[in-house]
Length: 167
Image 1 (cartoon, rainbow, N blue to C red):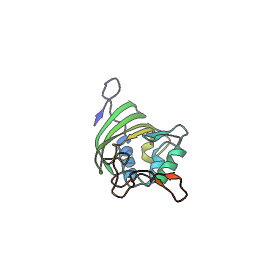
Image 2: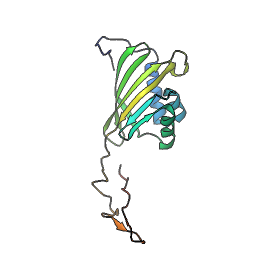
Image 3: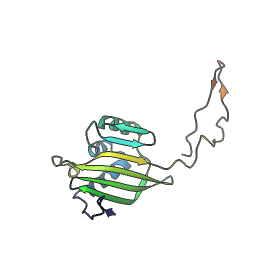
Image 4: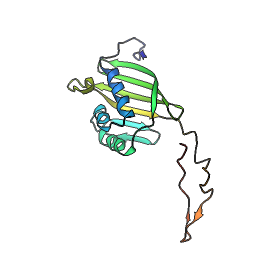
């Protein structure tokens, strides 16, 4: 772990930040939506982005989490902390997915001294990147998937949805 300020001055990692970060990871891997909601700032300006787009506001982020059925299983292989001040820090983590490949997770954390839960720490902005699946169904197909568009009974042309097996 490398706690560094943008000016390259070493600053200690603020109390409770890494415990909140570990609580976030635990909640993510167990799909504990209530804990994840508590760990993300309840604000209309909270951000969460990935390759699919940007969610703006705690309400959108919470709805996304409640409908996705959990995140891909992974483990943290590196964690880097850049301390901004006693109440703000940036954490960048390198993840290794069980299905293979590495990803990145970047989170801006802020501490609210009024909050007790998780030492007052909450994520105010996050970006997640994961590797592309090893099996790209836009290029390769699974045995049995149609290679071309097919005609329906009514004569209109349809295309079978891409297979998600193997991803």
